[in-house]
Structures are given as C-alpha cells and as structure tokens.
Image (tube, rainbow, N blue to C red; front, side):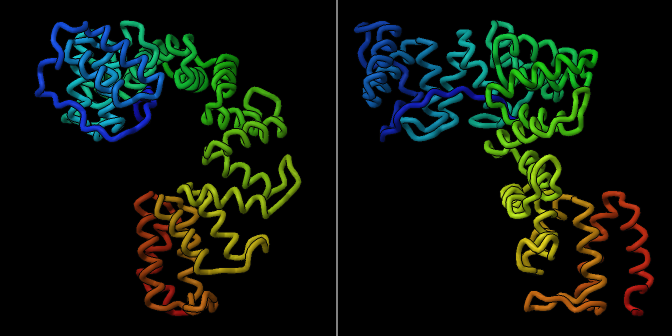
Length: 382
C-alpha cells in the first residue's frame, strides 16, 4: 500500500512555472510571503488559477512554507505546470525543513517511491516520523504503516498499533481499518473481536471498501457474531460497488450457490467477470469453469475457458493449474474451440509439463506426483 497523499485539486492550465534556480522573488520588498500566498488563495477561489500560481511562486521564493508546499503539490500533480517530481521534491524539502507537516508527509512519499530523488526508506520514515510527532494525522497513520511493514525501520507491531490508534481517534479512516486488523489478528495488542468489529464498522460507514469487505466475511463465517446473510450481502455489495475484488468474488459465489440469496447464475457471471477483468485470480478461474460449461450460463467456449484458466494459473492459483493440466493431459484442444477426449498431443504434453512445474514450485503434492508420471511416459501410453 502506498502512502496516503492529500493533494488539493486545482484547475489545470498551461503554465511553465518557475524554475528552482530563480532564487529571487520578482517584486522584492513589495509584499511579504504571507501576503502573496493569501492573494494566491483568493485568486484560486475565484478560479483564476494562473494568477494564483504566480502569487504562490512569489510567496514560495520569499520562504513561505505553506506556499512552498502548495507549489510542490502543483509540480507533483502537474497542476498549472508540467509534472516534475524533482521540482516537487525541491519545494517540499524547503517547506519540510520549516516544519510544514504536509510537506514532511509528501517528502516521505517521494523518498518512499523514489520520485524526484533516490529511493530511501530510512529518509521516508524519518520525515514521516517528524510529521507524526508534530501531530499530523496522515503522518501518524503512515508511521504506523511503516512500523507494520518494517519499512525503513525494524518491524514493530506494538508501535504500529499505537500510531494507528492515534490517527484512528482523529477519524483517519485508513488508520481505523488497520487498527481493526490489529485487534482482529492480535497484532501489537491482545486480540479483541468486539473492538475489531467496532473499528471495522467505523471505517465501513465512511465508505472504506476494505472494511466493508471485512464485515461481509465476518458475517459470512459467523466469526464471534451470528451468521447473517442479509448483512453479508449488504456489506459485500457496498464494497463491490467500489471495486473491491474479494467482495465481487464473494457475491459471485453466493449467487452461484444460492447461499443467502436466490440462485442466479447470470448475476454470478457478472460479478466473476468484473473481478476477472481486474485480475482477481479466483474470479478468473470461476469464469473459466463457466466457459467450460459449468451451469449452462454461457455457450461452451474452450478458448475463453483456457484464456481465463491461464490468467488465474499465472497468479499461482493451484486449482486453475490442476484444471489446465487435466485438460491438456486428457483432451486434445482443437482450433475451432472444441475438444476431443482422450487424445493427448505432444504440444499439449509440453503445456501440461509447463504448468505442472509451476505447481511443483508451489509445493503442490498432486503436481509433484503427476509430473513424475508424465516424465515416466505414463500419459503417452494411452
């Protein structure tokens, strides 16, 4: 997960901007940096972005840290100027040195991703820590996440919990979600399901898709709550509408099996297609099976079945790999999208061996045994 960035939205216009080697303001002694910045803010509210940008440039050159941070954002986003991460880094650093916490968080983001500078997780951690310790809510969440990952610092779940908690209590929705995970998994704090559920709900009510997905699965499996398919569907649909892939897959399975909802294979297919096209491995495999003829929802289409099966298998889905191997060992795939049973070609044997080796690398026992039989010529003696 990348560091959260809070970037203001500014109407984009064509402007070359100011170069960082222009060290002096263009109208010395005319106005203070704060005055220039306030004038820029006023012009921005009037949608006069070009003149607003010019004022912010003047203020930034007069060492106004807020204007420097705003100018950094403009260069970072390509707003009113050409996108330039080096320029963004330059202005963020100037503002960060003056303890502008927004700039410190953004500087941490640039260091973390190697944008406009050499990637340096230790520097990223250092700047985010400065912002967090000065009370910046986003900095506090990100500091917790760095401790969670052990990014730029030794992994420490207790520290992660403490910083997530600080940010969560200040209504940071990402921190609320991760605090719930800490309570749910017992990471950095003793597991407490009631508190986990409370924080998941707080985040979910603020439209956090991950939290909504978590609630859907909690009610699905009845984890310390009564199983409730109505709530499963409610939270899963909210999450799925925001593109949450696990919830899209879950809904596909519910409609496919008729669990908690009237069985509807067409709707199941729609959810599987959404997830499959976004790269969800399990959705891809279920769509593969539908094209292979499961449920009679679509016309049998072996080419599409293999396409989605391979997409899933490429991501390490062992079920998809086993399906492909069985197909290639037991059938001859023809060019017209049909299959001929029990006729294995050399080409298909090579494909089967390729996928078996993938599964062997994943320590799949079935694949290990099947690959050994294949090398012994078992499947060529039929």
